[in-house]
Length: 130
Image (cartoon, rainbow, N blue to C red; front, side):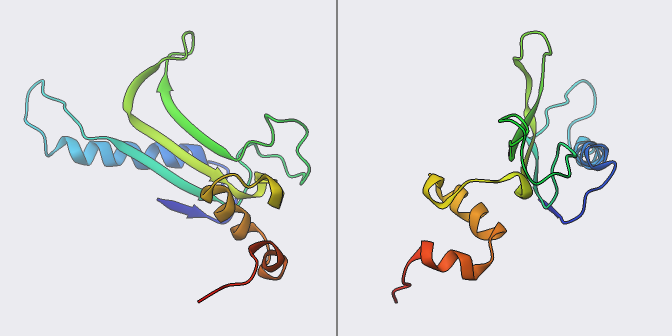
């Protein structure tokens, strides 16, 4: 899990490098020979920058307003997942633009709270009971 506050020019390269090192370390624990059974490896990232590199606060279309990325190793032609034990899940918080009435899940609520000053959230959350 990584929380990245600033845009890094080679962020994607770094995530691939980090996961490949983790896979390489796990290879030393498996049996020698042709047995390359590996456990699942997933990268999770919460990003405080946009993955698409756009600096504008206003998304142009639905594709550009994506905030959740679920990346897998897949075939470019068929779009079928080739290897299901390696994945990258990333959230780009600046791209999360839902309004309070559009929050449909706990995940949406968490992203909203993370990106909104607390004073603006109190009317939406309502009174806190003990």
